Image: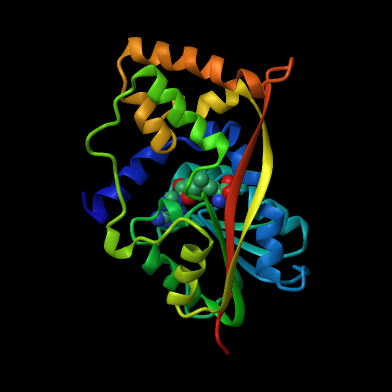
Length: 275
Ligand SMILES: C[S@@+](CC[C@H](N)C(=O)[O-])C[C@H]1O[C@@H](n2cnc3c(N)ncnc32)[C@H](O)[C@@H]1O
């Protein structure tokens, strides 16, 4: 499968799914927002910072940055995300843009962030270079991704699918190996330094995801992510088995209120545009 079809999958996968994303997977993504902004700001002070939030989704990072005094511009490839984010964060400006092309002149922003977006782009190398291009000399680029090997929360889905006998679609979208990177600290820092950023470094961020079991099910059930692609490709009997396995295998993490507490992790990297 080519890079183009990876991006085509992404466009159709997110299409019209802003609300369901916001009610489900956005909870998972939200944890890293403060650390991501700290990494972008350098000294932690965001006031007056011209910040670009790429792949802004339903506006979690933009809202926090706006509350911390940044002058926020958000972009997303998916129109329903742009609409929802604009409603949520009236203090920021949002428009549609699709990595690896950002419709801004060179050096427009003091800092550029992307929270769990580089992992949704068919050409991450070009995307990182574009984020660098729109950031001013001395400014920072900061990004997060999900690591491999997968943390417990994400690995659970693989265990559930395997136990239910779910067959993965033969044509799972994949990034072209020529532009791919290792989904770990060295790989993500290397992606940023390869884009010409200096002092590139990465850390692992670990936390306990707290989300209601129904919300954790709802994102993939609505087709979000590769997990959603696998789930929605199954026949009815297999989906029933998956749901049963989901209930059983999430039980050790579930409180009496139905809220799961599951360990998860991300990789956060940042780099500086040379002066
Ligand atoms: C996992 S969500 C993260 C959203 C948000 N950053 C957050 O932390 O909640 C990924 C977002 O990236 C957007 N996206 C995917 N590919 C993109 C691309 N090539 N250019 C811009 N946005 C993209 C999706 O539409 C989606 O809103």
